[in-house]
Each structure stands twice: as structure tokens, then as C-alpha cells.
Image (cartoon, rainbow, N blue to C red):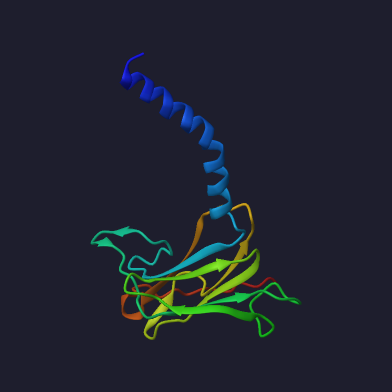
Length: 162
């Protein structure tokens, strides 16, 4: 056997022996049962409630928006005074705030409304974190449209039956 071929065989055997242990260490290191949640506040230029491209490029971030993560507690399944604040933050220049190492459970992410804007997504979003999201970062979007960009005035006619 040549020297290069024997080195190749040695490395292959070493990898075969160490690979299961490496996978086990990786699983223990990255699956501690805690998850990260990211919230993005953005200026929803087209008012569609989704972050993305418009005719002029990407929708801009909204820095400085206060966002809180609340643990959902009984008796209701909606955000209320019984819920406890777990973490809070303000969006960075890229529009993000990240809540780290969140244990399994039910939560609400609540965004403040920026003065002079209208929400295009709910300002309170329900979150359920469970152990099946191994190593993922769960992302939630908070779109807001400047009031002066709101071009449409909707009129809802209520029709009642006699």
C-alpha cells in the first residue's frame, strides 16, 4: 500500500470510529430544549402584511420598536394581565430583536405601534414553543404602514336582515 493510500484508509477508519460520538456531542450541545425567537419590525410599504420586495426594493426595517415576550398563563388563551413578561427588547437597526433560550410553552410576542403608523400584521402574536423545533430560530413579523402612505379609505356597509 502506498503512503497516501494508507493515510486515506487511516483517516477513513478514524472518521468511522469518531463520527457517532461527534453526532452525539452535537445533539447534546444544540438540543438543550431551549429555543430562540426572533421578531422583525418592518415598514410594510405595500401593506400586504408580508416582509419582502416591493417595486423599489426590500421593505425597510423599523429600528427602535419595543417588543415583549410574555408567558401565556391561564385562564385565557389571549394576552392579558395574568401573563408574565419573560423578556423584552428594542429592535436593532436591522429591525430585529431576539429572545434567547426560551423553554417550551405558550407565549405571546407583543409589539408597540410606532407613532404615525398603522399595523398590517397583528401586534400580538401567539407562539407555541416545543421540543420538535431542534436548533431552529422561530421568526415572527410585525409590519407597520405609515398613515400618510395609506391610500385607501374602506367603507364597510352593514346589511342586516329584518
